[in-house]
Length: 101
Image 1 (cartoon, rainbow, N blue to C red):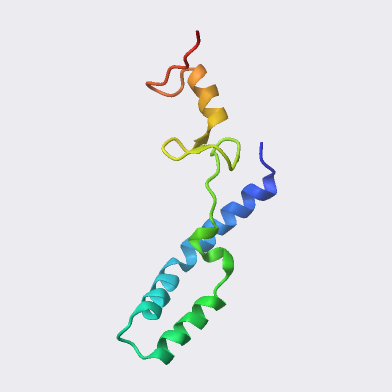
Image 2 (tube, rainbow, N blue to C red):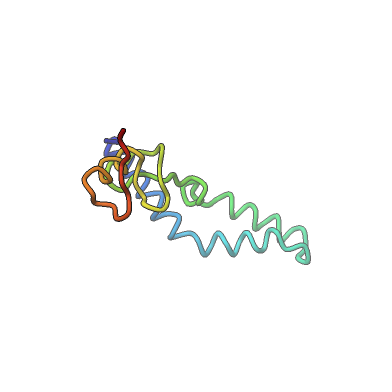
């Protein structure tokens, strides 16, 4: 089980990403538009740099929905490998059978 503080920090990052997504996208579009003057693009870059770091989507990290584990994460099921095995053993994931020999 991951620390509660790490899970909460990740939730906070997710909220910030959603909050600033539109503003960040607009500034990025201005900054990469070659038809705009250099000064305007530079100002857009400066405004983009003033936004909170945690509002960037690249700062997000996938975590298991059940345990909060950040490694060995299966995107399709949103759980870690450990929970995938446990849930599969209990028959809670349709179509998944844990092999044993």
